[in-house]
Length: 489
Picture (cartoon, rainbow, N blue to C red):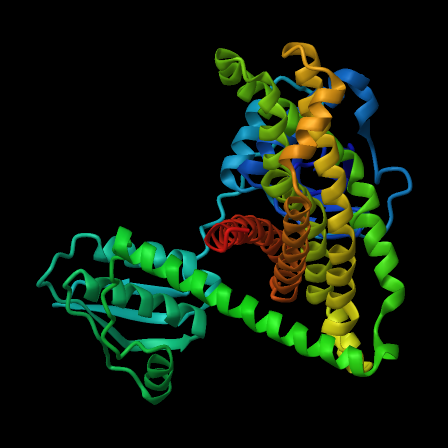
């Protein structure tokens, strides 16, 4: 008895496969066995053989011909490697191996075993009438073969034909196999083929009923594309629902604020200053840059027209009024919305999906008073100051254009700005900024509290909060403009 052993790896097994053993008597090799380190066995089929045998030949050429031939068990071989039962190659794998190793003369493979193919545990017969006679054992293990046989017997059926499943010869059936039969029956019924289970004993009949094999399948309804009018209506309803939720959240916040006025000690005052720092101080550079460029661009646009009439000095009026009444508060609110509004929605949304808000309620803390009101108060306090910075740098942007392109002096530009801009103009912008701050805080916090669905839900609500806030800011600004115009303010 001799043993040919070598080590290799197979793409079909993530771990290293131990050794491929060829035991042989004299010069005739028989019974290859593929053995893992843990002693488990793998039957070699054609899929494995196409990878393993070429790898074996390359291994032999790389390390030398005779180095791979050893007599007796491999060095250190114990247990399954030396004593395991032999598992033969199947026919295709043996033929492939014979072609691969034909040029070697140290080992000669015997003819592959002509063992008969394993018989199926069931039989299907459609020779008699319109019934498909099923006999034997139907289990999930042979579901693939069962499906192939069913497909072969039902492919040629058309609407109006009849084919019943005769279960008289079935000795054993499990749920997986019967579910497959029920599925095939349903497909045939939907194609217009009459199909029923017949000659079922009591046990099989109950199983057929359990899997709804005696119920007529309902045809699948094709989903019609949604019309444009339907999409508009659905979007309108969703928008109105969101508005209702925001107004309800605003009312709850007002009630919570009134409660804090009665019991100030219950408020989370220590969180206000950090929020003011993050939402206010940290936003100063971007607010200054954006509003300076807004004033700069507006002055250039106005200068082109004013030069034609020799009215260069009125650039100061244009920039001053536009910045302090409209653009200063609005641009500042948009910047704060993108920075702080999105941050509030993401923070509270993460707390919601991680159940931190529920934990606060369990501990007796009101989430509105503990989380929302400090953020709203912080924004209300810093927004007027940010708006003042925005007004100042916006006017400075117009001043740069006046000095460089319109031949104006600093004194004349400032004096003209003082004449055009009244104290009420600045005050109206500050009032707008406070209302903008409330809108940003309420909408972003409400979106955060309404978050669900994990990280995806947090991202979805953060995006929705920014879009909703921007729309609300424009709407509020338009309302203020109409109000001031009607009352001549």
